[in-house]
Length: 115
Length: 109
Image 1 (cartoon, each protein chain N blue to C red):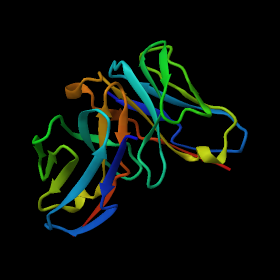
Image 2 (cartoon, rainbow over the protein chains, first blue to last red; image 1 turned 135 degrees about the vertical axis):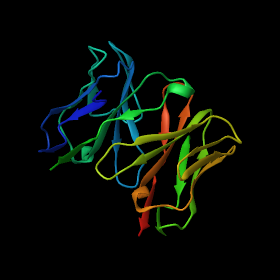
Image 3 (cartoon, chains in turn yellow, purple; image 1 turned 60 degrees about the vertical axis):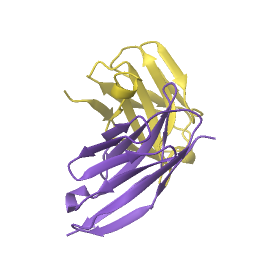
Image 4 (cartoon, one colour; image 1 turned 90 degrees about the horizontal axis):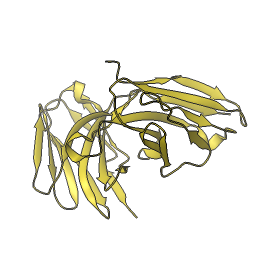
């Protein structure tokens, strides 16, 4: 199993540009998440999904959109990129939300810089 | 407001020098507390889940403990390969996790 795969690993955007961060998992997990990680801060939840066709906002959703058309894929779209969106983005998945099987499996991250 | 703090922010140890990392939390409803390890340029990797006060979990040189307000990650006789950032996260009821900022551990040979 590849686990959680994110692309691209690095990207530089100009202010106002748009892009999509791709995330796919091959573990047949129902739950998928997008987090951003800024220096000195904890991971912040952007959006999450409990299954295909179902998404919901997390703590910091402004400026982002998601879709979940399949169990495997959970892309994150940035519209009108702003310098405040410079961050490292992590996609994660989990089998369930129960305590004993709810651990998150993370991708390797996508480092985005907006200039 | 649900909050998770970790201390120290950074820790340098000599190889073999045991120590502890702290994770303190104030949350409205705790389902579980998770510890993750994160290597530079990588995503976090799961270490432990703790469910209730008094619980302990061990893995190699690491032992995690939980009280009603905090968790400790004890590192016994660390090796350079234990160098990483250690994150704790509290799972609230539902899908939400609140992550701490992490402790950056360096173990010198």
